[in-house]
Image 1 (cartoon, helix red, strand yellow):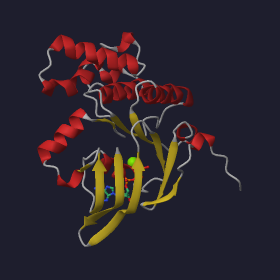
Image 2 (cartoon, protein in one colour):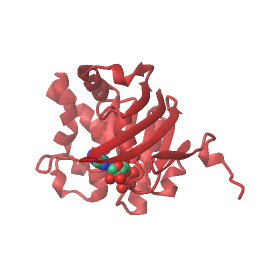
Image 3 (tube, helix red, strand yellow):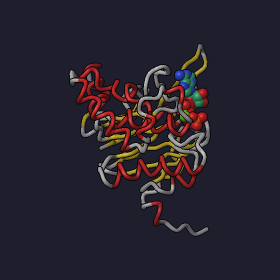
Length: 235
Ligand SMILES: Nc1ncnc2c1ncn2[C@@H]1O[C@H](COP(=O)(O)OP(=O)(O)OP(=O)(O)O)[C@@H](O)[C@H]1O
Ligand SMILES: [Mg+2]
C-alpha cells in the first residue's frame, strides 16, 4: 500500500535550512499495523504529513496504492485524502461549541449524503471508537481528554478509510484510557482490516503493533521487519 523511497524534507527559515527527514525508505503492506517511535523533533509528524499527502517531500518518492503521489493534481490529492485516509492529529481540532455527533458528521458534508444517513454513519463511528452514547449530544468542550481523543478517532473513521494515520492518539492519556484507545485501533486493524500507522512515545502501545519504525534525526535507525511482538532481542 505504501512505498517510501529516500524521502527527504528540508525546511527553510530565512537563510537557515533544516533537514527534518534525511532519506527515509520503507514499505507498509495492506492491513499492517505499524508504530513509529522516536524522540521529540525527530521527524515523526513531518513523515506523517507526507504519508497523508498533506505535504510534499523535498526529494524521494512516495507510492500510495501504486500511484506516485508527486504526480497527482490537487483535486486527485483531495479525493485520496477524503476517500482513503483517516487522520487523527496531534491537536484534535474539534469544533468547540458543536456537539460530538455534529463534529463526526462534518467530514461527510461534502459528499451530498442526506442528514439521516450522515447521522447513522457518525453514530456507528462513535460506537466503533468506544465513546459512550450518553456523550453524543455533549458539546466537544465538555469532554475529558480521553473522550475527545475517541471523538477524533470516530471522525477519522467516518469516511471508512482504508488507511488510518494517527499522531500520538494516546498522548496525555492515563494508561487505562490509553489502553481503551489502543484497543480501538487493534479492533479496526484485526476485525476490519484497516492499515494503521500510529506515532507513539509509549513502548507498551508500540508493542501491540506488527512492526515498529524508529526515527532519530530524520533517519530510520531500525526497521524491525519481524513481527515486533514476537521478536526476542539478544543483548
Ligand atoms: N514548518 C516547519 N518549519 C520549520 N521547521 C519545522 C517545521 N515543521 C517541523 N519543523 C522542524 O522539523 C523537526 C521535526 O519536526 P516534527 O514535527 O516532525 O517532530 P516530531 O518527531 O513529530 O516531534 P514531537 O514528538 O515533538 O511531535 C523539528 O526540529 C521541527 O522544529
Ligand atoms: Mg509530532
